[in-house]
Amino acid sequence: MKVRVLGCSGAIARDCRTTSFLVNHNILIDAGTGVGDLTLEEMRQIDHVFLTHSHLDHIAALPLMLDAVSSLRSQPVQVHALAATIAALQAHVFNNIVWPDFSCVPSAQSPFLRYVPLAAGETVTADGLVVRALPAVHSVPAVGYALRGQHGWWAFSGDTERNPALWSALEQLAEAPPPQLPVAALVIETAFSNRESDLARRSQHLSPTTLAAELALRAPTASYPIYITHTKPSETELILQEINQLELARDMKIGWLQAGQVFEV
Image 1 (cartoon, rainbow, N blue to C red):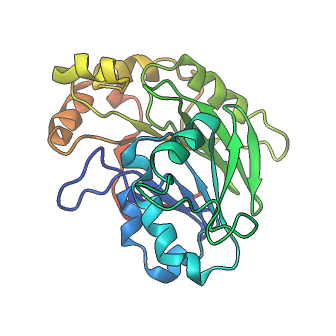
Image 2 (cartoon, one colour):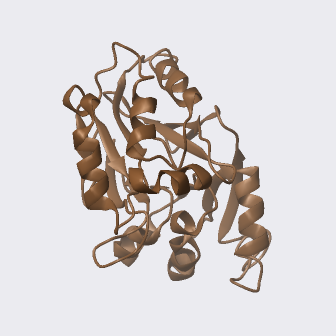
């Protein structure tokens, strides 16, 4: 399994794209502005989109991508998401006001878009790839995702605040039905610096201090690398400094996610 980072910023600026990951050639995890760097042919091949939640930085490119490639496709793009996320898309995006309702265009029988509801903890298979929805704690209903590759699970927290259930879910991945595989990497958000910790708490994001508290919940035997994502462009340098100052940073493999980075799992 190949996971390509299209965008990993918490907002836009030059060279900053919001959250999206291309898995192999035909699956997106979130559809932030990073999708806009794909070629038309690359977008045409996307059959599945797994959304973590309804916030704009994670869905912004979805309507435009569908508009760009739907006439080139013979099958609808399947959008997998929580029922609440689907309801938000229907009410506020694909509502024939902000954007056409592609779930019934050109017809209800042959649409450009098909919604596929899922729930936290559910495991689905998309074109042979096993995907599990992980629990998340955010200001709107949200999940993260874990994807099973040949050598392990690639896990993404999605947008989340303190979330003990995530660590239990990660431990359970290694106990999934055969082949039993370890977690190979964890991508976890840290949107704000410690000086914005109150804003982080109110918007239900992590800051370096709460990240440290979360990472302390990892299983003692866990050894997978950790990658920080979703930093605000104006805060990124400070967030990185604060994380590097954490005592746990010396004991864990903590890296910084970058657009263009590729995971081979």
